[in-house]
Length: 202
Image 1 (cartoon, rainbow, N blue to C red):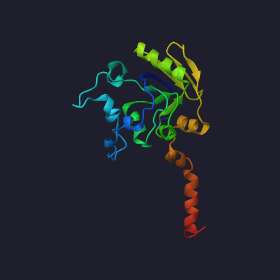
Image 2: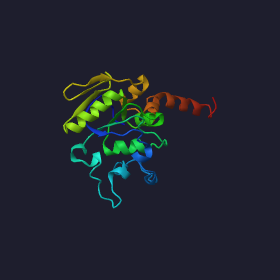
Image 3: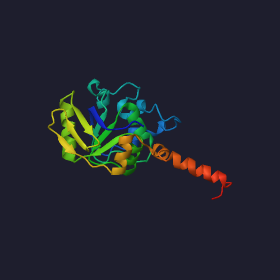
Image 4: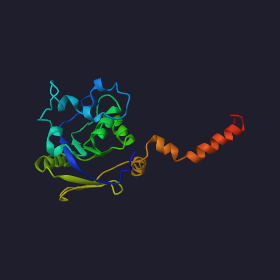
């Protein structure tokens, strides 16, 4: 996955609490075997009417938010089943970061595994970000993962956020579990070579 260092992006506000994974990516789309292509099904039941047309009242169907890359939402985002397809869909749609007052634990971990940075901020700040993004179509935020700092276009909102050191290291270096393992590729090869020289028994 790509390293996450300093990122600037537009905001898409979804002012709802308890947005669960079945709302993020409904279960009927989980039969796909590919890891990509889920973006078109993101928030399917909210984005589309029963006849398949776009629901023009939904935030992501509004032109000013279609290129947003930072999603801001209410508390307990990503609750429900532990499907990894949820961060896949968010990433495939174009989101690089999600800001909320709280996240479901498994969803929070899955985001890091898939290169999405989940940021927990106080509810009052999250509400202010959503309000500003609703009133200003050009509203953006800058996220500096190294400094663990986030600020908005006019620097009216400037705040720090917490992230575990190990997860920060992985995001800064673009490492998922496979990438972490490959950091020890030489040690693994040496072990396998020694193992082979002893007929598979050490």
